Image (cartoon, rainbow, N blue to C red):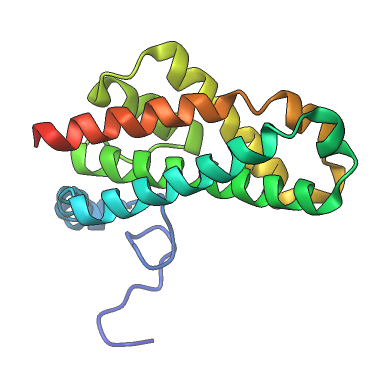
Length: 178
């Protein structure tokens, strides 16, 4: 352990935890650290992610246009939809986290929470944010429960990609106001 490092798991450590738990001795340190956690918006980072969102949307729309039956009988198409849907949801979450972090309102508990908390900042309708936040659950299934994917349901629920497009457009408008 380096000099000055604390042995307590209750002190503030950005390196080991995304949730900061502070004991009485480190309260001032944590207050300073949480003020530093307000990160500036990086338009380059956000625009790069918006371009990725456009690509994922293009791929998903092309594959969705082939129809449900074609989707259900083509493993290669299923794999491409799974991966692009996962990346689309993750990228939307990353953008929302960036915006919420820059707002200084504290760390969201979940990806869905990040989407919902970014929505008022972006003037994104709550119903769109709620549907997109629901897609974060799909992202978790695609990333962690990939053996249990119901491909019929996955295809039927691809409507959320339209909400991700509205989210991206709201982010573009928001960036234009900065």
